Image 1 (cartoon, helix red, strand yellow):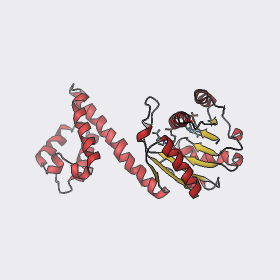
Image 2 (image 1 turned 30 degrees about the vertical axis):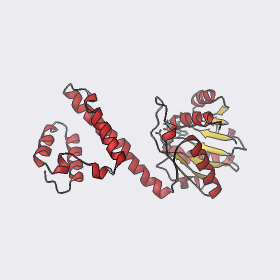
Image 3 (image 1 turned 45 degrees about the vertical axis):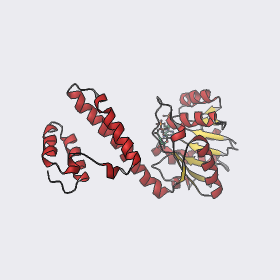
Image 4 (image 1 turned 135 degrees about the vertical axis):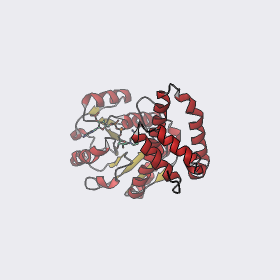
Length: 257
Ligand SMILES: NC(=O)c1ccc[n+]([C@@H]2O[C@H](COP(=O)([O-])OP(=O)(O)OC[C@H]3O[C@@H](n4cnc5c(N)ncnc54)[C@H](OP(=O)(O)O)[C@@H]3O)[C@@H](O)[C@H]2O)c1
């Protein structure tokens, strides 16, 4: 099987390495910045190019792993050179349908995890959301995802768009709250480690049961005096105050502060 990865960023690196380690080597790397393509290709011991025109004419699977807002342009640039390959992107927030005008066989291969270059992903825990036009291609993507990841779900464009919104709440927004908490402690010379056990317990309970049922805190209890005191303490930072108020009222719509 001939696999081409387009892009040389975080997903390209991690996916390329993981595929290789599972005996499914990538056959070619193509990325717009030659030096980035070359470094990744060297680490995977595979040929590279910076030009869509060089894409292997007999490629079986082309994985577009570029920034979301570049996927359509990249698809358009590759279209004249792609013959019968299945072309997928890896984006949670982009419809698979953006590939439809350019390729007969297209789909999505979305690993639902946050990847960074510094951390080795725990692949055995990563769920994949896949989709494609034909059952055969869906089966193919599911098989690869099972080999390199964990659970695999077939998720259509409409479902994935909202799944991505949910992921932003669960990851990006939750992390932003951690960051605010860290800054609040830092301003009073307190170490962030103080909150680690609480954070761990929050996550453990949310995973064990419905997070809605696990909600605690002054807003949930309707403890208006405490909520007001906290808002006063945040007076010097109106943005954090606003987040605190919004979330408190969202947790308990009867709360009047
Ligand atoms: N990182 C994650 O946590 C994660 C998780 C799941 C899915 N995804 C999805 O995976 C895809 C890639 O994300 P990533 O995190 O790997 O991004 P990244 O690390 O920022 O890498 C982006 C890649 O896209 C290339 N690129 C950017 N603009 C381009 C353009 N206009 N034309 C051609 N190539 C362009 C970059 O090339 P240069 O090297 O030349 O800059 C780079 O190789 C995205 O669709 C993202 O939504 C990411």
